[in-house]
Length: 86
Image (cartoon, rainbow, N blue to C red):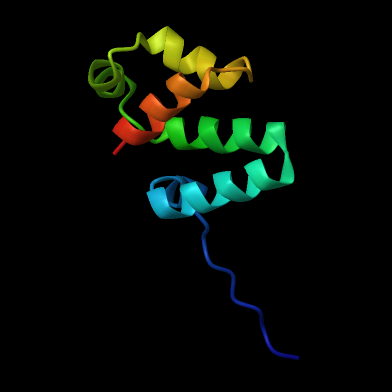
């Protein structure tokens, strides 16, 4: 019997890759999965410097947080957050 080697997985690394996040969001939107969209955005924002993001988007940090925690942000707010995030 061969031994299985496990690798450490850091999910935060996936959320730092904007292309992977965009692909996951696109899939979630196409599936109509509101919870997945919210989870992906929350994970993505957890990897961002929220103070800098607030400055870049001209949105308050609480607006950014509420955009993903309430689950009903405006499209304008989402686009600002996603486009200005690094």
